[in-house]
Length: 552
Image 1 (tube, helix red, strand yellow):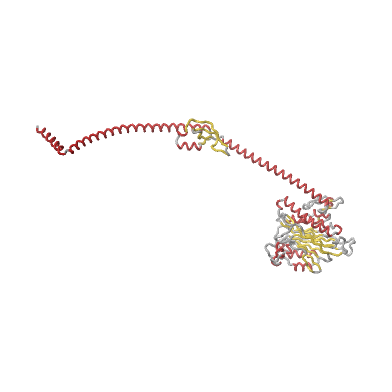
Image 2 (tube, one colour; image 1 turned 30 degrees about the vertical axis):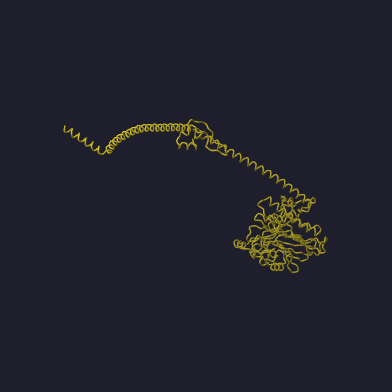
């Protein structure tokens, strides 16, 4: 690998155009177009995640724009890989600290021009195309599920365009348990090389032949980017659409003072905050041009119909580095998406993870974060303990209040077989009785009717002690009445038994007399019968005697 400056000095001129599209509510793509570096990132992870992830990735790569390390291609290649891994760690760290960003990630495709060589870093399903000598070559391979199916011969490229899982990415940067190492490639650069980087919102709807034709037909970089984005939207893209166009140009006199220069452009989500990137580069950066075609999408056509005059294109916003902002009285914004910005002694500003000062700052920042995490953990534990104490105090207060209320009540119940008055309620909580005996009577429960026994077993409740005592008197009176009734019933029963005994004696005597008479009569009769002749004779004699009396 060459480590010296190439015999031909090439310069890179680039631009980028990005549009939110017709369906998405926000732009999660981010792009960078500079003199030595071009990059595109397609964020994913919901409304609050994808734009953050792609912005962090762009900021992590931005330092390569000026850190060419004297044309050492191998060093720049390692630097790009390290920067991509640093972006991955930063995205994961931010997702862990902010739960709403969990699951965010981004693709990343970047190309750097170093000493006459192209250094390409790629992960995800964004693409890099190289147009050389009128021929278009796809320089990256999608890290997607449908590409895996194509590579294994299960589906064709035509079937992949409409496959239901065409958006499933197998390798990205972010909060996922997958390999975050990028593919790195180095290729010799040629004058008139044209690069086109794009998100899947563009290459997912345009054929490679259409892309090749457009790159060939439009020599102006911005016009070419405008056309590609516009055509993708008209073709029905439902995603954010971003294109980066870069041309390699040969400088005839590399030592001339009037060499062309361009301000680095930032598009998409990363353009919302340019100051961190300006601090990283220590030079001005600007927002990329907006999509000019007002009729590029249905939403834009509707807006054009509503407005009487088309709205003028907003002028690009330019952000100055921190030194200029401080001179102008503007407040510096050091936020670089988890990668710290270090201002060195010579005034140079960098966020290169390979720089010892940056590495030291990262280490210090991580130590600070760990301390904050421990402090937050201790604070959370203290809050949990206080919550438990408060809950216990509330429960204790509630229990005490319930007990105090229970002691305003009274009930009459059973105490070892006699009627007693209790203070409290006839129940217990976790084995703790909420009542105690205050007065025991001599009323035997067994001497009460069954209905009273049942009520006393459950407890007869009263609102005051006096009411309970009054009811005890009622029970006592009822017991006395019940006993008197019982004695009266017994006395009546005994008298009835005496009469029955006399009657039984009389009946017995009468029965015996009657039986005697009957026996006697029977004996006589039997005697007469036994001696029928004599009986008859006697009868006759009696009759004769009577008749004789009459006669006398």
